[in-house]
Length: 265
Ligand code: CUA
Figure 1 (tube, rainbow, N blue to C red):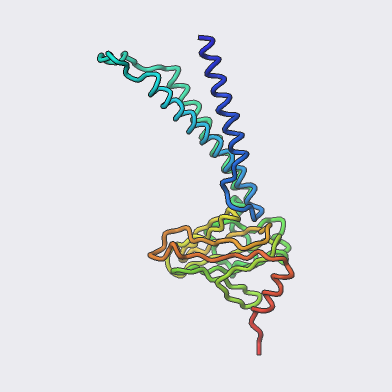
Figure 2 (cartoon, rainbow, N blue to C red):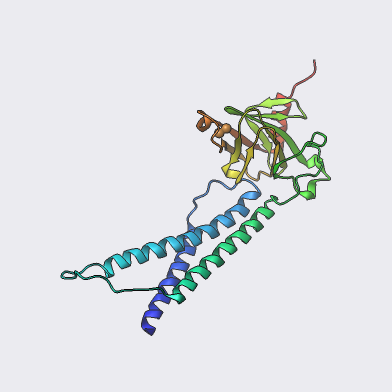
C-alpha cells in the first residue's frame, strides 16, 4: 500500500513538473507585439499547464487501465460489483471546484490588468458628445489627462473590410499604421452586421456591433506588420475579411501621416 502510494506520488510529481517544463519550453503563440501580450500569455501558460496535466493524466490512466485490466484468456464472468466511493466523490468534486475557482479569479485579474475592467464612460476626446461606448478596453487612466500621447483612430467595419479614419489628418485607409510605444485608441463602429477586430500579435479582440460603438486601446511594442482578422462570422467572405497593422518608428509614422493626410487646396 505504502509502495503504491509512493509510486502514485512520484508519477503525479513527474506529471506536474513535466507539464510545467513543457509549457515553459514550447512557444505556441504568435509574436508578442503589445503591452497586453505578456499579460495574456501568462494566463495562457497557466491554462496550458493545467490542461496538459489533465490531458496526460487522464489519457495515461485510460491507457494504463486498458492494458492492466484487459480481459484475460478464460475470463467470461461479470466484473466485480462496485457501488460508490464517498472519498473519491468528494475528491473529484473539491479539486475541480478549486481549479475552476482559481481560473475564474485569475482570468478576472488578467482582464483587469489588461485594462478591461475600467469604466467605459470617461468622457475622453474620442466620444462625440455623450455617445455611449458599449464595450471594450478603455484608454489607460494614467494618460487620460494627457490626450496628446494617445492616438485616436476611427474604425469602420463593413462586409467585408475594415476602414481606418485618422480624424487629425482626415486620412482614410485600409491599412492601419501606428507608431510604436504610443497608446492607440480605436473607436469602432459597424455599418452592417457584427464583426470582430482581432490582432493575434497584440492579443486583443473586440466585437464591432452595429449601433453600439465599442472601443479598443492598446500599445504596440514591436515594429512590424501584423494581421488584423475579422473574428466573427459575418457573411460569405468573412474568411477573407483581413487587414494589416503596420507598427512603425514615430518618425516613419509621421512620414506616412504627412504623405497621406489631406491638404486643403
Ligand atoms: Cu467581418 Cu467576419
